[in-house]
Image (cartoon, rainbow, N blue to C red; front, side):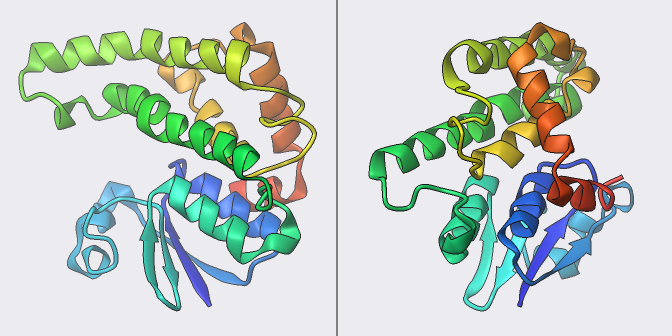
Length: 205
């Protein structure tokens, strides 16, 4: 049995959607960040990073969204969430998800958690101010160069789609008008209509 540790409105939504799309049997363990449950000893034994998502498997714990998404795609090949028999196409998905993880999410985090990178109040304020532009620049690149459509990689739905959807739901909070990116906005609407996404997002509100 798999157990996904998540918190509402976090990047764990992507892994949660992927599990649901894969038809996996799993438990979902909700953490309340407002009570700092992610920093409590019980959870730190599961994930010493004190973050979500974390996926408990029968072989141990996996962390980091790209790794968990790839694990789900490989564990449930019948769901066809990745082109496992095409090394180049699979590499493109990995490159896309790596960009979301290492660049887009980090740009967003500078608004939410500037204290991770600086102690100086003025420096933190500048990071927060700059975050809106940085996030917008990231999505402009995705819109113009990285998104194929109707799904991220074209006609086939993959594990890149719930990840993009998750980060795209943060645009308004980051001060970015999603209407600037019509392909991404259409993708967000398309994703929101999927039964698996509806089922999971109800648990993240």
